[in-house]
Length: 440
Image (cartoon, rainbow, N blue to C red; front, side, top):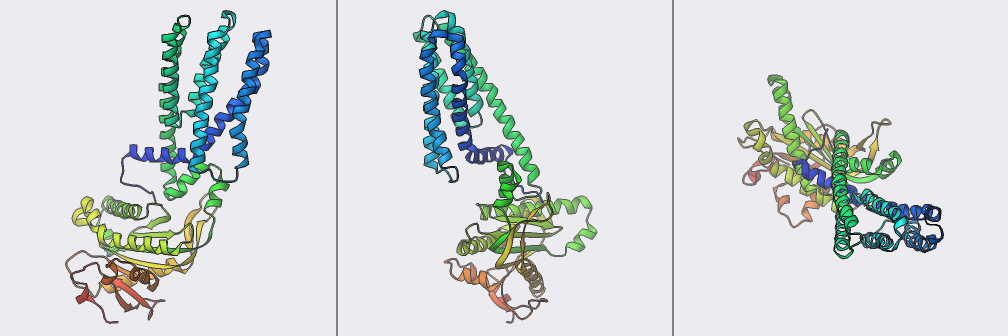
């Protein structure tokens, strides 16, 4: 299925760009330092070729540049196996901006002090600096804006203070602006392309996995990140009532529209209830299936999130779906089970999907079938959602301060394979729930 959030395209691209930059910002900084280091080494022989005996003053500058660019690279390589904290990233960023000011400041100094015979070489080098800095940082928009501002201030000051090179500084100011617009469009094009790739990945993967594939690039990285492993998980199975009858009397266009809008409403509720996206959602016809898991195997957090999601689905689905479907909004019931399953990317090579292997999903499906049985005993004209959960989820509700648990009643299941086991059900009609209690 495709994971769609009810949001504007612009906001989606902005959020994706922010996530991409967060993932790759350190790499951008390291690449800029590596570029400066390599360039400083390469230009040493060219200095002697172009400037002859005057090259010694440029040699000192190159050596100092090599030292400045080497320090952060050594620090990065030393901490290569560790995650960089926000403070370290910020320090690297300030260091990068400082290095840029130093590097370009010296070129402006050389422009002012170099003989006219050699000035054209310094002009070319300064132009290449402007181009290279914007090329390296254009995807990090805050840095790009900072660079544009620094160059604009430096060249404006040069225009005002240097009578000999005033026209040169004006031309640099113009080129800085032109390149700024050029790389701004390049960034927009890159982010649009990134979003298109992301949208295609959403047909098969959840947003979390899609971003990991997109940002990491190489297959082994994301397969390792989502490798199958035993985790606590909660499976939620949601099904329409009377779907076969509806499908038989509806046109293909109508049933397709109903499924699309219904599943979008469900998915929107899931996104809101599980903001860290530790879930996988899938569907087959009218059946909608969600698996929630914990990265840190934090059972309490998992059960808390799951009960919050179940309550949101029961209370909010009809309101959300009716805004687009009106009277055609389907009737749904829900079953939820907790346990340990092997959760991860599983399946044929190049067609792996996130799934939970074990009995938890099967129990959730049977609880949803039990919800259908319970619905058959209830006479009401109102739209409501029958929710059936296992004792572990109900126990979690008991430990919460919420009164949601008060709408649940204990019941002996009748469905095949869970017959005789204790389950807890809620019909989502608070005013009528007590009178609808079934015989235990």
